[in-house]
Length: 261
Image 1 (cartoon, one colour):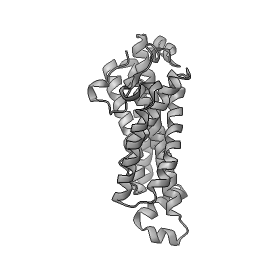
Image 2 (tube, helix red, strand yellow):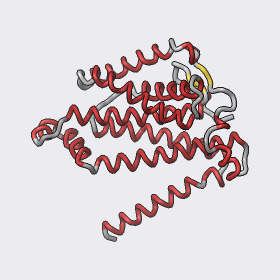
Image 3 (tube, rainbow, N blue to C red):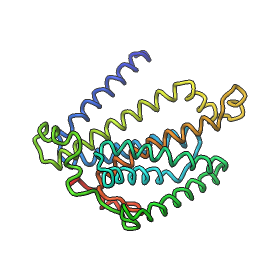
Image 4 (tube, rainbow, N blue to C red):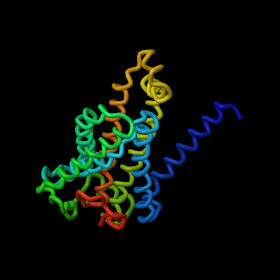
């Protein structure tokens, strides 16, 4: 079998998997939809981490800051400004991107383990600041208003499509959003690594001095990856907390993650 044929078969298999995943909320159980939602959100976080640490060599242990700020921004959009949670997801990504700018400014002055510790410190500072936001519950956090997830864009249409309850339809909407987010992240990462910037990034990973000698700017390229992965992580955090429906400055326990009610 030639390499071209193998590539065609791989793309065909990938397409079939995507089609099968699209139909899961229609033919599968609600528990299966919920489990796959968690798998795909974790996949998005892993893909962003792989791009950041695996290719850019930026071992950050403060990525939870972007998950949290994405969630808080989404909650603020819904509770304080009356915006639909679906649009709040994008606001969460933008908020994480904005946080990444000062975070990069301070952290990029450090190297190696010091960089990792620096990102953790910034993440802790962010957590403490969020704990003072009284409009969103302060240190105890807050929950989405009752019925918010059942009124999201697409829920009514999905309810008629799958013939289930509003809660099951809300689960299906968040599932499809997570699926497309995972797909976009995967394809975007694939295309980026095969672009000129992606090749430069891989050159930096292999030999920074050699990459610099051929005109690659390591700091600028790493900063770009840091900002892009922050946006992706923030979007994923906002989507994840639509499913959890409650945000606090403390990490959620596994038992707090369940189907939308």
